[in-house]
Length: 193
Image (cartoon, rainbow, N blue to C red; front, side, top):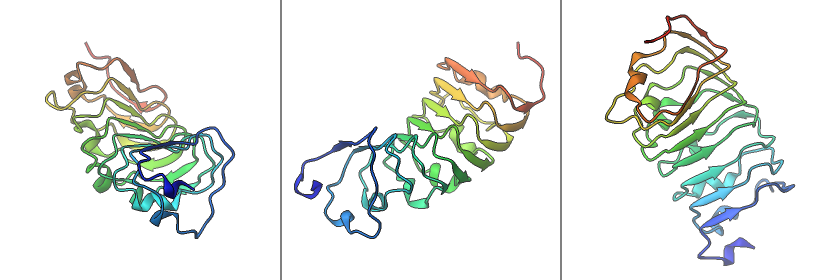
């Protein structure tokens, strides 16, 4: 049905009861999208047609019934908005993949079961303004390097994880920061002046 819409750039199917047909060849007929919004659609797997969407800038798959690991092909170099929150996802965020998203502005993967350490490069993606990884199972240190030249964070939410160590002093370089949530972790530090 969407194959005939050759100029279609943004497709919003959010808040519907959708199912995905496994094994169909929609990737060859679907036009190259810039935005795909499928939040709250009750889908149970990552849409396979995303493999061929090379121009995708915005992707919302939040609040679905997707479980398991995030496939490696989801981390497209063109993404500037990625919302994977409330999906019961597990596994880690692959540092080698997410570090290539040099135009990423908003990354939300809160309320999942993601684990491992938070990739250090997330503190140095110069376009990133919102990073929300609240309520996962991340452990280790908060990324230690937030450089003044590249930090444009307005919101950093790492609350309700298993992060430890100290609050990085380089966070002071994030002068545009408006919201900082590090609550319910295992941070051991003194209150900064």
